[in-house]
Length: 453
Image (cartoon, rainbow, N blue to C red; front, side):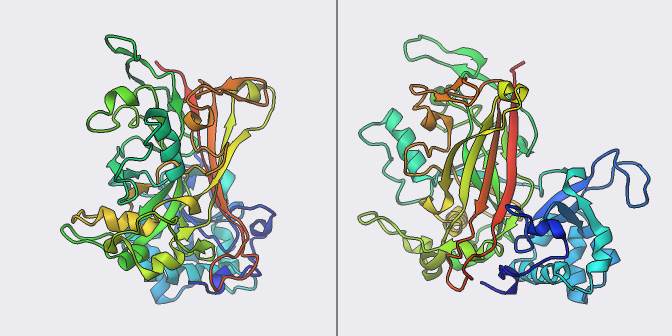
């Protein structure tokens, strides 16, 4: 649904929203949960107790504080009511209101932040530099499910264990997934401690308990559920498409040498539950409208079963998002060397769409709830060097990567900082999108590896 909020010529009175390469132009307006950095002076110039968490909208280098905006700016009655859960720091409450609420508030915020807006003078006092904002997870995450939609990753990793048959028979028929752990989901910037687990060498008689030697990242896209569904009901594809709230970046850290021994027969456990890193800003599906693409299957592949198929999904189920992983070692930081990009891929290559994940997850009557997180699985590209994890990029350690510092990496070492980034390029690929649609960014999801203790 392309409308005035997507106009690439739309300008904001917030000057930093027009800086080249910004992640957060006025056409984006992602939601995040924040508070003023402890020790930072408030609007009255005084440094007091830490503020309560509240919801904000990123615009350029600033955050629009929706707690202040709800009370310090005139709005229509409808918009004022929509702002109430956000002013209280409750993004889940706003998610539960559904798609119409998202679109209505997006239009109101876009108009208020546009050049010449009568609300501009009121909202100027509601801005906080992002550098002074302490971010948290954007919402309460009640459930987390990790899928396996990256067919290029699934094929590459499958070849390591099953060279003649890398994809299992069900892969092209249903979105494969497993239920993950919510308590260890952390926000961008949170350090990640190297985990312990049982390791068993192929020629060993017994496993040993030790820190992982093959710590890895997984470049994923996280889907946050909107209103959800009641227990015992299921979502149609059209309902699923309308319901997902937005996307974040997700690094589902993995212990590759723990996983092979423990995953039989019930799947990953300690190899996955020690940390999953999210980016703090939720890019809504409305912001991504200009970057929707047709969803197609390669010739000869089975078409989705009817409950996973719809005309809308075929027309625009894929989303054109450029995905990147960057690495900076401790030595690179000491030398003042910037992070090095390891790879680049695109979310449009995922084998299953966002709507299909929601529809399948609810197909047996599972009740999805506002703020539930669905991981896409590792998003690798089809080409060489496009692996979304170190196990692919280093061929399971057989072909170590060389960093700008001269160091080599097969897997992540202590002190390494792994950063995920993503953006939608100004391509205007969707029907009705203006050529040169504004670049939409996601911010980052970074974590530095700490030694095992």
